Image 1 (cartoon, one colour):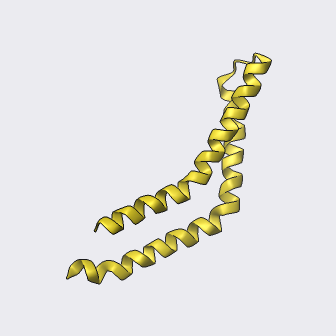
Image 2 (cartoon, rainbow, N blue to C red):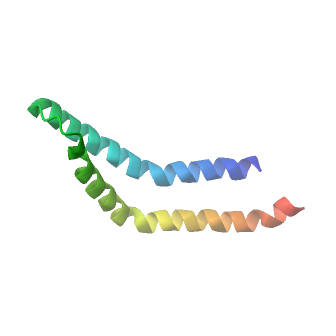
Length: 84
């Protein structure tokens, strides 16, 4: 049971981290640009972040689905072990 929880957490972090890291990086870059140009518009970061996230999802969607499918297969293979 602990192995299932551990592998679930690892799978979640593996799939979510590229998207989160790109969003954080784009937000940091836009914030630095805003600070250097003295632009104080808070909504300026949304469009670049959304475009970057959509780009990462478009590039990594196949890999993400493969990882989730492998984890789902792993879970279904473990059902008999959990029942008995």
